[in-house]
Figure 1 (cartoon, chains in turn cyan, brown):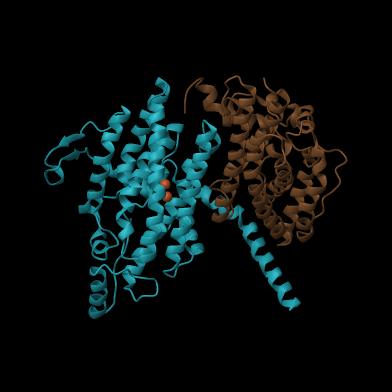
Figure 2 (cartoon, rainbow over the protein chains, first blue to last red):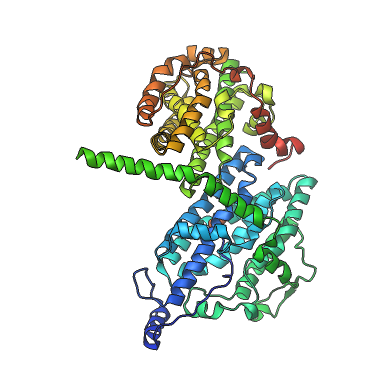
Length: 331
Length: 251
Ligand SMILES: [Fe+2]
Ligand SMILES: [Fe+2]
């Protein structure tokens, strides 16, 4: 579903000046870096961290939406939600595969998620409390994901860029589907519209936080920009998202829960844009550090699935080995 | 109503697919490996697709302006006609896969036979579903084999699943009076005639999995009469809650 402004990337690297310069030349020439190419350790580490976080976000992101599969209000919505959550799982798979090309295993990444060492997008630490949340997540969360991910289609690392191209197509479908859920609710009964407004109220600010801290507080952005892992700053992407989304909220007849939101014709080099109120960064860091409503439950659910599935994975391995043994014996 | 028997027979089939889809949907995000999150969802999507086709056709036959959702969301426990097998809780992965195999191993020859139906709509529904059921047999069958012939623990769990589920097999081959009439009219297959085909699907898989199908002298039967276990009511509480709490709303 989404990639956040990377949390805690470490781009330090120890190669020779000449090596780094030659590498930078390839980057500047917009050459794609492929897994077997020589690359600075910092570049590799940053990508493993970022792709891993992204993959974990897809997988943890299945939980809040999966929470509504059995309560989806119509057969059509149930089928669409099943398909969406399945898409997110598929995104997780391609991303784990992309990270594996950098020399880290899926098992290792999974363990880091379960131990709390690896992060995932903090948006998924908010609960889905009503059906409208499924609409709001598609509209806002997949919408923010697209803003983040479209530039990643041009990321300097080939496997990540290619995974993103495939994923972005599906995310934009999710975004439209989520918006359509919101539209249906807003044209429905007063209770349905209230449900939609409440979902916007709860998801608006967390969606803005998905872009990560302000540029001035974003420690590792600069190196990522130089390596063309990142193409736009957190604040630039956030601004694009707000400018695209506020008119969509107006069309729905919903109120963006920001009393300071106002049009400023000077923004975006005179093209105009929306100024927004102060983001509650204390809340952001609280949730990132593990104290959101759902952090513990999300990790517990992932661990439970993994631990309770251990006997299944062991049996699959044991069976494959038996089969191989029998085949060898027959030869 | 054009054909009350056909309507009732279609509702039975649609309920089977909808309830089993619901159960598979409960796994989504909680499977033993990511690939199975995707595979279980795939199977759930196949089932809901067929359920929708069947409810829609049932509503058309009924001719009272009800929609697929009216039929799925606004009937109560006693009006549901699904097989008892499909409402059973997921249990562990062995239970879920064995249940899926039992169901698909029946539905595959069922839809195969329905390709000869006198009814064009049913032939269309069958044409799509028969391929899907072939995939479900392969997927669930492979897991039954892996688990049955995997580790000691997996073999024990598979055996426990077999003991828990075999008593629901017989109901697959029973026909309600409505299904009987639809079969006599050449619209839907005769369920009782599919026992051999079911066994042909199951037997090689169970042999490879080192499992035996126990006798079931007292099989559990009742779903077609709306006589369910206690689990179905809870499924419906969850499934129908939005439709019930916002009467007439559009979603
Ligand atoms: Fe998505
Ligand atoms: Fe995604």
